[in-house]
Image 1 (tube, rainbow, N blue to C red):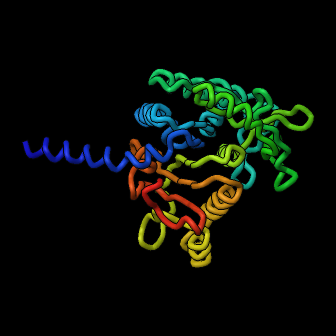
Image 2 (image 1 turned 90 degrees about the horizontal axis):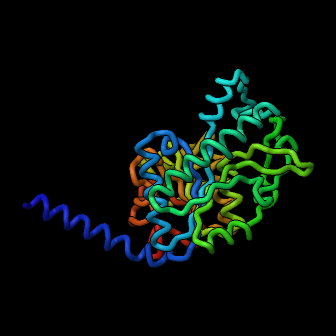
Image 3 (image 1 turned 90 degrees about the vertical axis):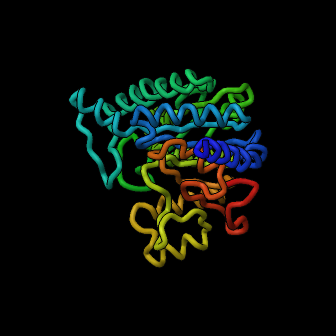
Length: 297
């Protein structure tokens, strides 16, 4: 009896805590980068589909940009196509572009859409080539030669806004058209950031396989640019996390209100980060916002 009473009380507290966030975010746009374990573990895939459907049903506009690196490597291997990396990034030649198209714009994209729609989410699968959604220039102009790997130069945001106005949830495979009609593979993190910036999204959420930003005292719940620079200078943020954090703050400067890094390995981490005061990951925000508050985690 007591157990039930405690359980009911806990559920009531969760719902009451979530209410102001639901009211704040109705009609706002979230861009979610979907990848990592949340995209490969069967139970987590189901959880993700339910979570984004809940967000949509309460009036939040959802745009999903997904990756699929592991699946691309597996399919390429099965087809006898060598996968090689340059400075940790996939080299994409003409043969690999065909695999990327097949896996990202085909198999994975439609699997994600189907799973969301089974839960009532009204998802529609598209890739950056559709209606000129994403256009890119080659990454080699800014760094090492990676073949057909691009950097997004323009986003056809009016196309996405039209889909959102009509009650649809775009699920975007990160491919883009080059200046001469080439097909470019685009890093999903960077594609999501560019889409969020173009839409002036309320939130950009990275579902990843890390708890968030970790400092000396454990997970950092909220991080401003000033605090981030202090942690970089002090060696608490290091290695591959530095460009990820700097990219997040560039996205904030482009008009996104908050950027979140959330552990996609935890069930319902997306809802817990958005609808609870303390969250479950790290949110990055402008110095002037400084902290989690009643208007949104």
